[in-house]
Length: 321
Ligand code: NAP
Image (cartoon, rainbow, N blue to C red; front, side, top):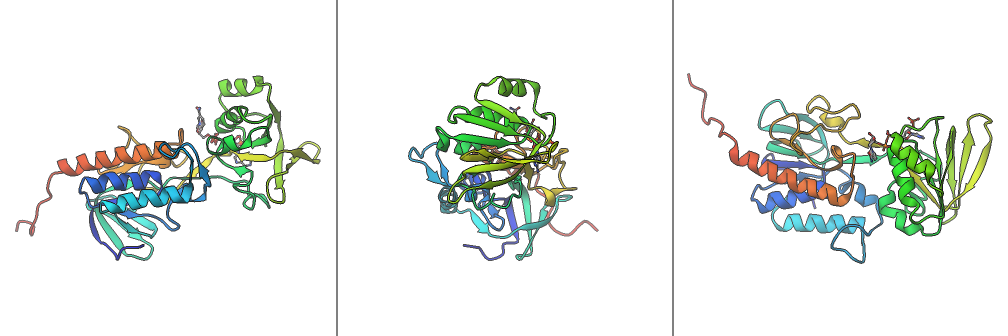
């Protein structure tokens, strides 16, 4: 459902994953009359996730899209409105802030919550997307449990790859980390832990060139840089841990971003612009869980509510002669 264009709002929420929709729920219940500009497609990373077993309150698990639908329904029940559109430009230099949308014109907002999330990077292998959710994953915490007694491959040389490999040893019989370089980028302590683990081995200086399998993953093809030779690693799962890209392009120049493009915050949700708050993976590159993003969405809404309650009313009427 998309609302007709709404031009002036007290609070605009950009993004409609767990962070944005939880912010919408709290803001709606605080009578802030929030407008969620949800992005197209709406719903964020959970829309691409199948079974979620670690969101509290769902002991039998829930499908990602279904959880998003429930979040949205709950926020709408208290009056949150939705615009299924993309924000394509912003002006945060004065208030009300201006958010330019793809097809619904400009939205003016007295405060904004940025909850646009981040996207996992993929390897762009020929069969990677076909086998997503069928053995290919970018989240060990989400999917590791489904790989009991399996052999797995993790790609990447950073902290995430080490953490994912270590986490997966709880379920897998063996985890092979494949890294494209001769040295790992991960912190020494995580490297040391992974190297010392009896279930973890490393293939360095090698690229993963494909993943194959009819219905589910059956093996991974790697090519070693030195010899140029390709070989197959038998595995039933491929975990891609090569980093995430925050969805912040549209805020570049308007908000302070860190070197990797994540929104910089202080006091948890406050950005470099007074009245603009951030929630979820758009600044949290550490925890990246649906439940932690939802928690940050709640915090951003409470902070926006306080901001709007304390704001100095702007002068009304024509300027003095
Ligand atoms: P990252 O540090 O950017 O590491 C990404 C890894 O993937 C690098 O080893 C990189 O190789 C490799 N890579 C990138 N693109 C690739 C490609 N197309 N093909 C093959 N390999 C590719 O990302 P991250 O590990 O997700 O960590 C992100 C941030 O979160 C970091 O600051 C990290 O310290 C932090 N983090 C911290 C913890 C913790 O402290 N417990 C846990 C997770 C993450 P190269 O090395 O060759 O560039």
